[in-house]
Length: 245
Ligand code: SF4
Ligand code: SF4
Image 1 (tube, rainbow, N blue to C red):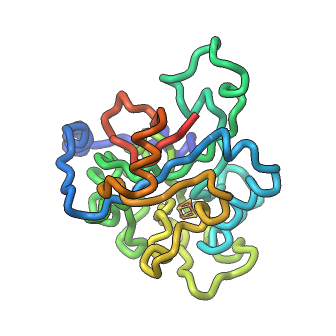
Image 2 (cartoon, helix red, strand yellow):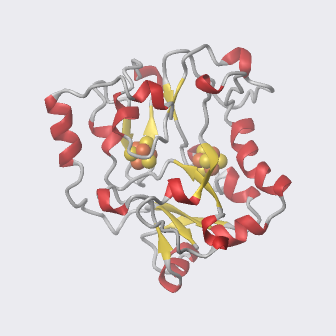
């Protein structure tokens, strides 16, 4: 996420090979749950500012995400971006203003073909059977190769001890330490309890979450019936986060 930090990292030849291998078409096991998300941008943008802000804030609150006073230290799992920079390959200046001006929530795409997991030297990040790209913070050595490999800038690094900067500690969720990477987890801790991700719950119906492998799920039906876009589709990472415009 931190541009200046990403620019200083150089991948080794074998890591570059693994990143390139990541762009081969992934095999999808249709028998398993495969979690995905749809964000209806028009519906989301119709929400009042306070409700949109709540979608971002709830993630911070339940996941003990620190609020640092300096932008360079920022740690975030979901945040607002603009259309032009989120969808550079879909953007052109002839788009209607109502699309050009959309606020776009961005979070980890939980890519089907995630380049970030291929470069981790310790196996601290991987794609689970249900498609969620997850992390083991204890195995993270802070090399930030995964940050360099993510073409979306969706990972954050703890440059400082985050704990003193957590506004209100949620005692039921873990905290992280200085020197580890973190990112959106699709709220696995909530999914395990049969709940929806927190941002989805706060989104007043503008975020839809579900099983992409179940053709009868709401998310599958929505994707069948509506035109959707994904970030940088030309890279072959196969994001499981879709946007309706
Ligand atoms: S968005 Fe980035 S961090 Fe998330 S799975 Fe894709 S490559 Fe990895
Ligand atoms: S799915 Fe959960 S972890 Fe990911 S952005 Fe939404 S609230 Fe945060």
